[in-house]
Length: 447
Ligand SMILES: Nc1ncnc2c1ncn2[C@@H]1O[C@H](COP(=O)(O)OP(=O)(O)O)[C@@H](O)[C@H]1O
Ligand SMILES: [Mg+2]
Image (tube, rainbow, N blue to C red; front, side):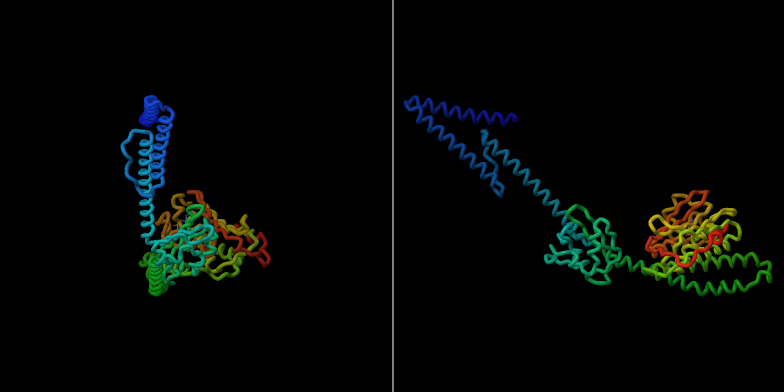
């Protein structure tokens, strides 16, 4: 016990002893010890009851009471302690409340819609102002309403069922207006509550569309003049004017490069505008044969080209786009492998029931630092080497887009100076048994 409490305690005890001694003395004086002592004891008990009542009143009070009197006894001390702890508690509560209000005000003022959902019942617990503008939720009607019912136009039930694994919805039409495009994210931030965030991305998507249209239009407009220039250049025979021959050949090379650039840009624009591709049967034996022919034509005998096909399956997808993706990979393997190197194209089953197309080369390789960005438009490890080899910097972007449309993924392994392997993984749903008789091994493997 702290010193001041102990002294208050002794003081009260002392007072009690004093009263009792005084009562005994007074009793002796008037010759009535017991009655006086009893009356004094009763008075002491009564006084203590009164003090106890005061403490109870303080404990039960809803409003703040006045500070206790400045007595020095144990009851005064108790009164003071209670008063102090109550004042502290009130201050703490006020601080917490203010903080809570500040957080709520901040969440309410966010430009993005924030909806707190109770996880088990999937009911709305709270939402901010933006949720009214973007999702059409109304106060107080929608507090406690089931989310799936309130946001019927959005594919909510599947999404909520995915919980922690729910992928963000990048472009969903708002229930308020269909031309309002939203990006939705589900954040399971606690065991009990989830956060639904919705952001207005209409402007962003419109800009993106404008960019796409612009690139597509420019490429389209460039195509005709380029065809004309290219056509006339082709008609000129360098033998007619030998002194112009080197210039002519350079002009032809550059106009060829520009044509390829425009074609690649148009291909990318076309792929970007598509959400899905027609699902045709893609026969892989003729596809691999075409790839080999293309590799050999591009290599002109400078590389050893091998093709191996032991998958025994074909694919579902777009023949045209898959060919464009594969031939970009093969073209890169040939272009970025010096003379005497080897290019191996291999089609095999994957452990997960899918299939893999691998293009392996023994070329320059790609430093690891470049790998994360290698499929970006115009990203090249060495611009001069890419230009020299007739590259546009768009090949791997096209590959990535085509593979996305086939739910396939690209894996790249590379060692500088030793070569690279580009593997395209197709899921089991993209694979179907090959019906025609497989080519004999001797024919499908060419060194
Ligand atoms: N098989 C490969 N070996 C080494 N580098 C490669 C290979 N494939 C692609 N690259 C690198 O990736 C870059 C991007 O490839 P790509 O998008 O096809 O454009 P490019 O038109 O330059 O070939 C290339 O410039 C090259 O630096
Ligand atoms: Mg390329």
